[in-house]
Image 1 (cartoon, one colour):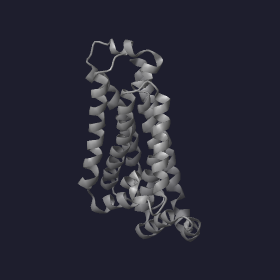
Image 2 (cartoon, helix red, strand yellow):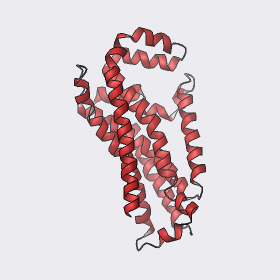
Image 3 (tube, helix red, strand yellow):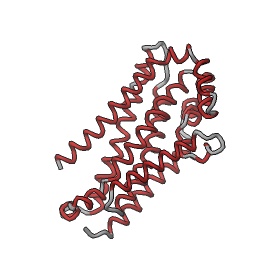
Image 4 (tube, one colour):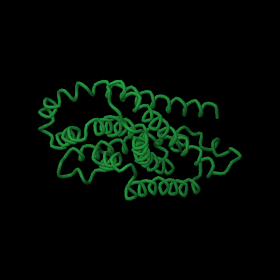
Length: 254
């Protein structure tokens, strides 16, 4: 148990530290980015989607910049990989190491065994995102800018639900497999594919990353509320994937 807890703390801390370092660097760079926006636009011109991002930042200012840097770039690129790697070995890793029987011998129900690991993995994603997002208003004062904390935290909730969905789907696959490396590679390739089609203007609306891009999360900031059509399906995917994983795990033998 102690080893598992130390591993969970290490994952949570590592994810949070890297997110915070990326956020600090992005905010410090904001004045230079703003002053050289014309040059950035020229560099982004060959890729229409990147050019659209630059236009949104020019129109909405620091709000869109923070959303783009912290959530779309930092949380999505790093977080999607973290979600997959956190989940791939949760059950499949026990089977692969030959320790499944020992794990199942614990005097608790299979539901509790699975729920403990699922909640721990979700927390390892949610806590760093929420904590680093909460530091944003203070960091912005260093560059003479400001944002309200409330809308930022709502963006963090939607981002966490999105990455939680990646985690939950990978978790369900782990419940049915004994090959964590194959699960991780498959889901990582899928996330790269989804990000790649986001950058293709004719395909971008088919990308899952539209759920947490600059346009979507900037709208959350402006409204000051989450869109039910966004967060409810994400929550349903999280809970549904866990339910599927548990149903598979309940019938599994060591």
